[in-house]
Length: 493
Image (cartoon, rainbow, N blue to C red):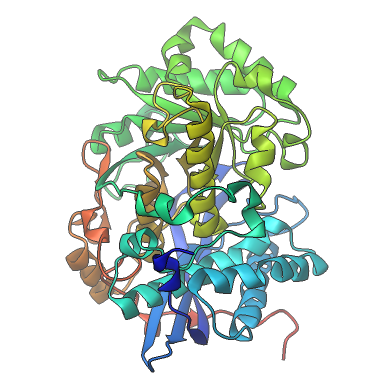
């Protein structure tokens, strides 16, 4: 065991508190089977006790997103919110009763039992991962503040105590401490703009406008933010997808500089044959020549129940394919690689430990194969054809955005899907003092415009140097007094 791991402090959890505040979208966003107009955002506030008597507090935030973790159409949005709250409650019970451990040790020793308890009450593994993912970030924030370390320093020095584990036995021969020490965060990252399934493409598509002065159509987004990276949703209807992508290409092809795009299937296809038909039809459409050439990968096009049951090599021969929703366990990515997938998404809602493990897998596999990157635009810093992408669930400005960006930066991913700034009016609904605090702490990432603090995207990029602060990427905290406690479980007294 390395000296850094030996130095990873053990501590106990003294308290875990959950809060919520509502997030209202300024325009609807459709992904997969849901059109979202509002949702609660969950906050975790954690207090830890260290052996020297020191006490520290940390925090994290994540949207309670409907119809991504569980896409059962029978369930309402409220049902989905309650599923995620249940995962939070169950993980809190486990963590508070678990005794002392390192930050990673706390996660590792409860992981299997927590997944099992969630399964017992009908919660799938993606939902099970949500609770620990939020708590683990708040725990790390508290630990960083106690040790006066940034998130980057805590991971690079392995102050979290990551060790070989049965959760990822395929990495048994990898020098984990050396791998973590070698991670180098970026200070600027490109924003990959998502075009949702009901997003307006041009002004001609609009009958009414929000009228708040912010971009509303794709062509306005490109003009305002200067994006050169895009994420394009497809709906599983080949004819409709071709027509919509053709309209999108009409805007993107007018960009003078080269652009790149990913295609997100959001599990809309039953099998690989349907996706192959889409790709062949796209390639046969002259109006889509430049757009098709720009596609760097395809994200989770096949329904999760089918995605890892069949080899997808014929599709992978056309474009690299990654898993997203299918990444519901620590062995998902290796199993996917055996079937022809070459990438996996990083999402803070799936847990930052899983992201670090999957990044290590990319390094190990690329080191063993010594194969060139699989497509132009796929992150060359990964060192070969296996790679990670950075995606989100309309992550909101503040803790959620900053912690996700810091993780992405440390993983070495050079572009990240960002759409929360487009669908929500920045921090407009938050207390003025809270807005000012975040802007003062992170003046490179935020700006004040149109009456609120909001994400600043300049020339299609996010500047994130200020995230290298003590704590998990935040020099400010939310106003806890302006939130409501997370509601008790249904039927609870």
